[in-house]
Image (cartoon, rainbow, N blue to C red; front, side, top):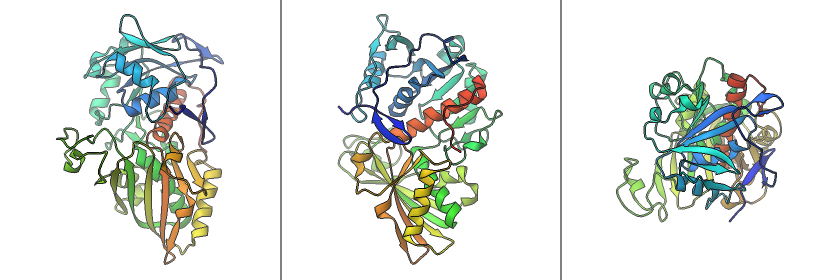
Length: 384
């Protein structure tokens, strides 16, 4: 299997470093207390967020809740068909009430109602909500009122007042002490928003349309059969055999990040029979007359300096989708594919590992929230 990769300045490398020693809630690093965390929902994103957050010296993950068995949880956090085997030793505890990662205990429950887990008794301060199921402010506020959590970070957009949808590098300056509920938006929004930022700030956007060529996900079926997760009938057809046109909320969700673009962007998705690494086709009508070289230069500059460094990539090599598996950047421009039609229509391809890039950003967002609003220390990740 492929090794599990991590990020160094936006690029991938083999993880060879020793595991951070994590022994108790009271352990500190440089005199700073760790923030007690839990993960609710241990699917594709929940497990990758767990992997990335595990080595963060500020975050102490003590509990996982999911409907699967503890054996499945331990097995799937260790072994991943796409992202490779994790370089940690994972074992189910003899009593079956949790699993250990390099000897550190993570307790485990199988509650559909998170209020019954007992987070308050565990003194959980930060909740990593990764079920994709709880998407209303009223429901998520129960983490504070019933479970004793201080902050919640959600792995899906919540489009209601009282929640802040964050794309790091684009609107994270809106984080505040008053906003206890934040989300990491969606994977495609994380890919699209950096591109939109660069084009909007350099050339202005009149309108635009995007198509995301997106890998198969768990909302589709392996073989033709009724789909109980989505009402879209096309997702009931085999995800491993078909190109499947479907919806994406990423373009309209951009207004949560850039409200001034309301009504100016929309798009669709095409699900393809691949397991990883997606591509967003962005088409914008811009306010200025531009050239292909000017567009690429603006994108390249944004990838090298400022708040998008390490988030936005710029690639001039003729790469394909598998080359971006385990790339933790949110968005990587395929510079060879950039086009300008009639001076004001711009077409851009942006690659993204729709699992790793998104999960890495969520782990970073958890670090920022925990550092600034719970531990009162400087976060490890700054995009300025």
